[in-house]
Structures are given as structure tokens and as C-alpha cells.
Image 1 (cartoon, rainbow, N blue to C red):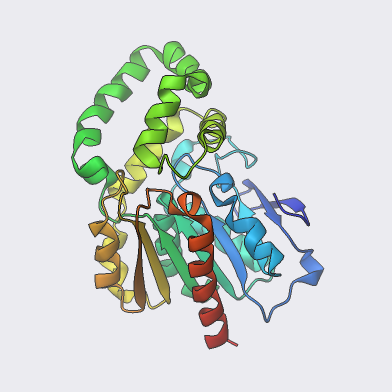
Image 2: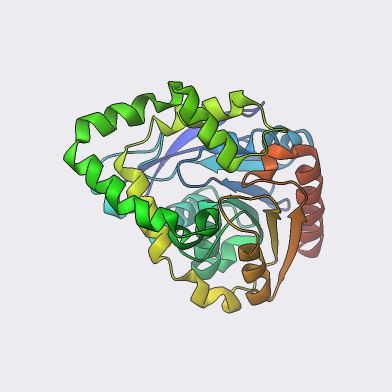
Length: 300
């Protein structure tokens, strides 16, 4: 992932093993320069930043990526209910403290926006800025694809999985091989003219590595998240990004964020999908860089 790869593990205060990776040695951390903390979305992975990581690393920026509890290389044991936004943000807060990182800029995509906002609310001292891409503070079941279709279908799908757990588990583990499933994901969440199918295949392969129960659990977390009531109190400088062709999270939801957050600005990407950082990486990278440089200069 990085040219200079320094993977490691960290144990939280409740003894959960969290995987993280940096492109710098702990002892080489430059406290005067910000650390970019990349936060992925629901059932996503750090591969969603495959075009941002080499760009910023080439420019000499310090970068931190990690896996949430119950995700990928982090520990997937115990009660899945402990995988919630307060604990995810606390884990990251403790990790930043352990690494002695005091100046960071968070970049969150999709559900990662919820995590960034929760972190900014609980631990504002950890970040000097945040970039929020394709997020929503409205329950996604109510607005995905500009309808409440997901809210209607999800309970029936969950009931099916409980009735036929072996069948669903098999589908979950192998759907990435199904070209129909690949196309549905491709068509629903990406700009098909800009993103290669290889990106979708890796995305779906990574999903198959997660516990199947995680999908319904994370959807419920997003449904119950009440951070919308705290937006006006979040003073962290924020860049909000959305694609004007996002089929999953309608574009007006980005405007809700900037309308209610006092230190925010909005950037809408023409022909951008739910993953504009993969659709138009050069354009997005330059816009991110402008915000990062401005935020760093303000805090130097």
C-alpha cells in the first residue's frame, strides 16, 4: 500500500487488537506536519484510497490507515455490538495518542463520514481539519437511491439470512465471482466510464473477507446515529465533497452538512458517483491537496 510500509498492531483500552499501517517510523514522526488519517466506508477498505495514497506519499505527507474492530486484519472476536461509532472513534483516539500524533487531517468516505463527525464531536483536539466524501447524517435506509427501498427490503433480507444462514454465508463469500453482482455494484456506485472493473472486483473480494452479520449491524449503526444534532457544535474546518451523479447518497445531503457546520465548504464533482476519488482521482487529489495545504498553513 505504501512505498515505505510500517504495519503494526495496537491494543485498545478494552484489549482489542487493532491493525494499523503508516508510511513513517514512529520515531520519525514530524510533529510539525499533519498526518492524513484515511477512514473508509461501510464494507469498504483502504483500497478506496488507492489513488490518494501514492499521490500524497510522493509529496512527502505522513499517512495513517487502520482497520476498525471486526474488520479485516483487526480482531474479529467477541460481541459484534462493541463495533459501534463511539468505540471505533475511541480506538482511533487511543491509537493517535499512542503514536503521539497531535496534528491530523481526517479523510472519510461514505460511512467514514459518520466516523469523522463522531470523532470531531468527541475528540476535536485530535484533528485540525477533515474532508468528508459522499456521506450522510440522515439514515441511509431512508434516502439511498433517492427512495426508502433499502428500508423496506433490508428486514426481509435479514429474515432470509436468519432462516437460511448457510445459503447466505455461501453467497456472501462467493458473490464477488458473480458477473451480475459485479455489474450491479458497478452500475449503482461508480462512474462506469471512469472506473475499471478490476476496482469493483477487488472491492467485492474484500467484502467477502468480512463477517456477513456486519452488513446489517453497520446499517443499523448508521440508522441510529444522532450526530446531526451536533453539527452546529463541530468547529473543525471541513471540506465536504459529493458527486452530482451519486445514486447511493443523493447530492442534497452534502448541502445539509455545509448548511449546518459553521466551518465547512462544499465541492461538487461533475459526473462524480458515490466514489468520486476513484472516478476522477487527479481532480480530487488536487482539491484535497488545496484544502490540506491551507489547513496546514493555518495551523503552522
